[in-house]
Amino acid sequence: MVETGHKFYDNVAKKVAWAHWFTFFNIIAVSLISIRYVAYSGLADSALGILYQFVSLIGHFSFLSAVVFGIFLFPLAFLITNNLVYRLTSILIATVGIAFLIVDTQIFRLYGFHLNPLIWQFLQRPEQVEAIYSINLHYISIPIIFALEVFFSLIVWKKVRNLSAKRIGKPITLVLLSAFILSHLLFIWADATQYRPVTLQKSLYPLSYPMTARTFLTKQGLLNEESIQKNKLAQDGTNPNELRYPIEPLAFSASENNPEHNRNILIITVESLRADMLNAKSMPYLQTLSEQGFNFKQHFSGANNSEQGVFSLFYGLPNSYWTTVINNHISPVFIDKVAEDKRPIGLFSGIGFVHPEFLQSSFSQLKATPNVYFSKTQNNNQVVQQWNKWVSEQKNTQPWFSYVYLAQKNSHLFAQNNHKTVSEQSEDLSLYQSQVLTIDNQIKRLVERLKKQKQYKNTIIMITGTNGQSFKKANTSDTLINGSHVPMVLIWPNKVPQEINRMTSHVDIMPTLMQEVFSVDNMPSSYSSGKHLFSNNNRQYVLSGDTNNYIIYETDKITQFSRNGDIDSINWQGDRIEQSENNAQYDITLLIDVLSKLRRFNPK
Image 1 (tube, rainbow, N blue to C red):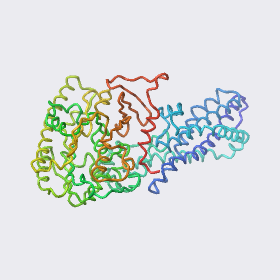
Image 2 (image 1 turned 180 degrees about the vertical axis):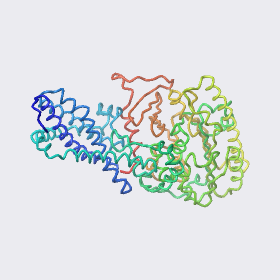
Image 3 (image 1 turned 90 degrees about the vertical axis):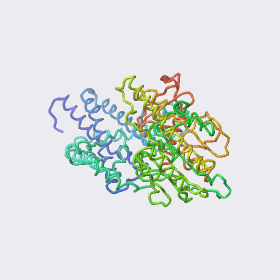
């Protein structure tokens, strides 16, 4: 640091030099604290993944510290002339930043994501949530942080000339900058090649937005989608321990003592089927059939899309686990039990088994299992024909399981579009209703075949939608109201028909079958997030949504919140519910319960 003889500029130069070294000290501090993220998430599955974890840690937090220096410490060196006030201001900024980082690490440990507006609401009302106390206890560390900041700031202030004379600042800066650049280059490569030990760390650190260039590389001819898919499939199924599912080994009572064990099971899902389609005009056969069994009037899919809707049905889990399941080919405990019982299995889909990702999730372990029939069909009519043939070949002496997926013929036309006029939306609805009527006839053919085979009275039949459907513009209240609300008709031999008006969910289906048919001894909470469909206890809410936005359905309102902490509520008429300090519409305890469900099956 060279003095010019100009008092003001020499003073500014000393403050800036001090700020450089003070920032370097804080880079070391935040990097050490941020090792907690690695500890809570676990080391990556490969040496390169581990290397990325620590290179990105150093590069990312060096960058954040440099941003704080550039936005606050550097300009303040010119604005604040008093050296003591400048250093105290810098110490306060560093203390606040590190305090938030420590709190964020604890939030990450508890909920798996970072400090956001939603979590900030939790921190404002700790009296509702016991877990928040453990977060707020970290504020006790603030005086300690402040004291350490003061101590090192004094040392750096006294030694700033000697430190500058050593000329080690540029090499240190070069190393930190290299770590930052290397981490982004590694992620660009990992994203292009679908190298999961790296790409799974995208949200490991707060305010982290790794660079990607897949679109650019594809346009330049350096990458193609086929190679991406090959790389992805080559890594699928490599780490089934990413999910603690089931939480404990399942135990079963003797099947001889359970007459329900000999029932056939038929599950029919209709793609994008709205709840209000179950009426005498749109689905006359299913409406009549519902009067012979259980009609669940307030039933919700676990997702507002078909892929994760089917997932929630077979796994009984929130869709937050979707990515882990399909990446690792983890099969549902229900399908495992069906296969273990050596039941004949018939799987039929009007759109194949690639999308939704049946072969990577629900049926991933059935490809080499005997007595499993995978249909080869291109439309619903072929599904019905092949299913009728398959079921006619089944013996009445051996119970079987079958799943039928009936697709919407023109589903691409029903995609929500903000540019569609009201008349176009009306046309889509009319087309949709005519297709639903056709599907109703296809359901009739399936059920009537059962009756003809004299198997109807010994078959549990579940008919529901994968998800709902909205014909309004995207991101409207209608999307929230109708996106997950689906019909649910259950035919169960020797059970009294009933209309059920309490809220139920797709996640309740597997616990019901596991208990009633397979006599599982474990509580549903050990292998699902659902409860028994016949339980008379009213639930507080039903959870749905997708992997980015979660939707909470309650009797009086619908609340949507995102991973980023954005939160919004509407009533069932579609009117937005405003939040104010005097009108606490968001039940923090409920949201904490939701967050716990979203992480309960993650490895501890």
